[in-house]
Length: 215
Image 1 (tube, rainbow, N blue to C red):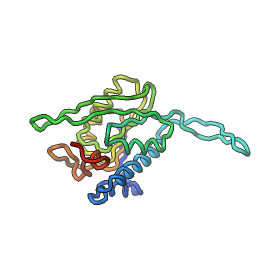
Image 2: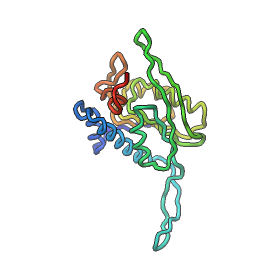
Image 3: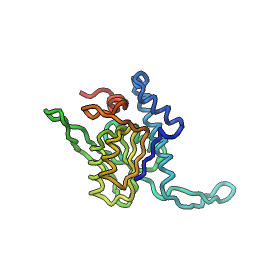
Image 4: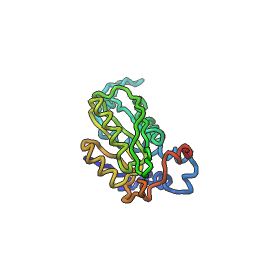
């Protein structure tokens, strides 16, 4: 399994991650969303290097130029609601891609434990397609694995890419164990999680920071 970790490379993307983590800067929800979107654009560029291309003759005003163009657009999937800005960044680059939306959330039991509840999937045909699944936080990895497996059970997906701004070591291990063929793209990897499965130091609740606290 391939894992691409932005934090291992010196680039402007690390500034976006630093701002996402910063408890003062993240008070500006518009900037928080924009930084997730910027990361999505960065991930899209990196992922694009691994996709298939075809040579196409392009007519210019002065002649013909053979150009390498994307052979097939990927499908961009996300888990609502936190993943929307990250998906938008991917869509800014793969601007002809179709999109998939999944509603999944943690349903907390009386004991304090939680189960993943998946209520809704809206997707184009994924047979033979490259699927890029985006979610800002890869904590336990349970939501990501459940959503990806549901799509894999329905369609013959050619290739799976998983994108997260921040991941935990536990989440990556869970994905590797359950989706061994997936390629993982992360902004940073943190070692710890709280008893409620929030990544430490992480950045907090990405959905709340992007769109306001839920009740």
